[in-house]
Image (cartoon, rainbow, N blue to C red; front, side):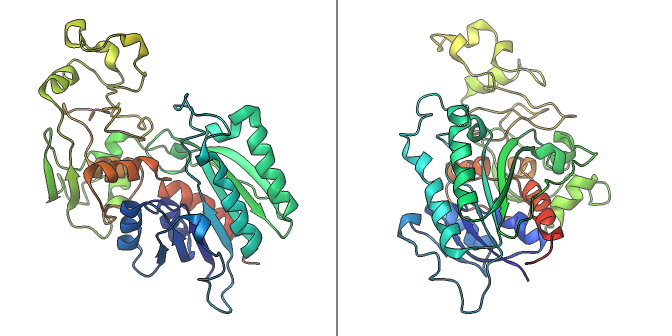
Length: 354
């Protein structure tokens, strides 16, 4: 059984994908309490170190004789995100956390590493940081490949681009997995989930149809679960719901009548992703802070539920999130889609254990 270590693990999207591919996780590192709770609940056999990564000895929790095949993770990415125009510079403390990733790799010396981040990492400071990180790994003896990968190319019903850098210290030049032919849509992902209303919070509800009647993707998500869990919808004010009623699929805040937007001093400063109604027969837009962006269900005048957002990220229904609703929504938005991770980890395993 190949072993991996997940640092900056969040709720565990990368770990789940690694496990689906065939890895076993030695331990995970996550500072955020709610995310660590989620990880522990869904990975009960994995040690979770809920601590600042600067305080952790990478070798302390590796068992004698246990060989670590891969170290993987994604340092907090707010500093590199294209949506962050205020602190996109090297002075942002989040932007130095990649050095901790390098420390873990240099100390543990795994056969492989997988470094994940937002698409903006690739272009940050005109590629200076990306080139610096690549050179650091090469100095440690790793042969490095990197790419911008698109989640919808790997079975995730969402247009989401991520930067992934993979390295091997045995001279293997990693080739990223080929794209899948079929792309799943929003309705493929959530069409069998229960109908809900604004502010509804139901721990468990029946699915709208049987597993046989559900589509291929929905059946995959339902494995191991008899009901739809965590059907939690944020409660929006009545005037927000009134705005939703004017927005068609694929439209955003621009479709809202002027008289319903008088509280905005300058509507031109609104982000194009605000008040976006998802298109049913296409992959979703990025599920990041879907509550704050007020992403709208394709047919119902409300925001997305926790389970719907989790489905769009390819978290199976048996995966349960912990913490407050706000923290759960953040965990989902920050996560790496497990099916995207699975495709990359499976490709790594094709090269064989070293």
